[in-house]
Image 1 (cartoon, rainbow, N blue to C red):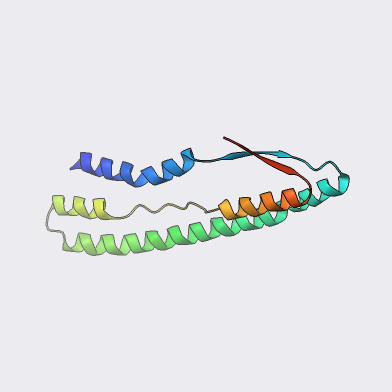
Image 2 (cartoon, helix red, strand yellow):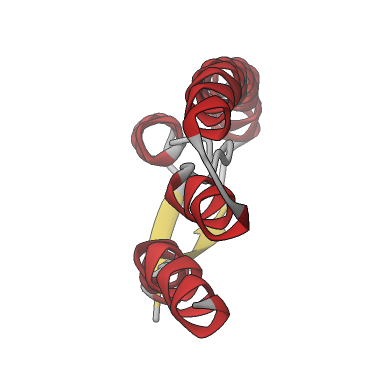
Amino acid sequence: MKRFSAFRHALMALPMLLALGACTTYEYVPPSSDAGRACAAQCEQPRQSCIASAQDRAEAGAKECRQTRAFTLALCLAGANDKAQKEKCHERAPACVAIPMTESCEASFRRCYTSCGGQVIEVD
């Protein structure tokens, strides 16, 4: 049963690993003018605010998940009659992770950066 549990947890992590493997990186070429560089520098503050908000949302979601997990696990364990049933309760409990979704923040930053005269080059 432990082997199935390890397989299940690895399977749950697969989408996250695939997403990380598919990450695109970017090279930023600054604008040539002083005004363009000043403009591009101003793109960073909204980006950081957006990332902080995404992190807050992810953490709030993970907190809610942990609370739900604790409640459902307690209910399951209360009804479990033996060690095997208790083990199943733990196996069925969802994993709770905080993964901030920041792609829209990065996309907005890239649009802002290019509107200031900078270049964003996709590097694979």
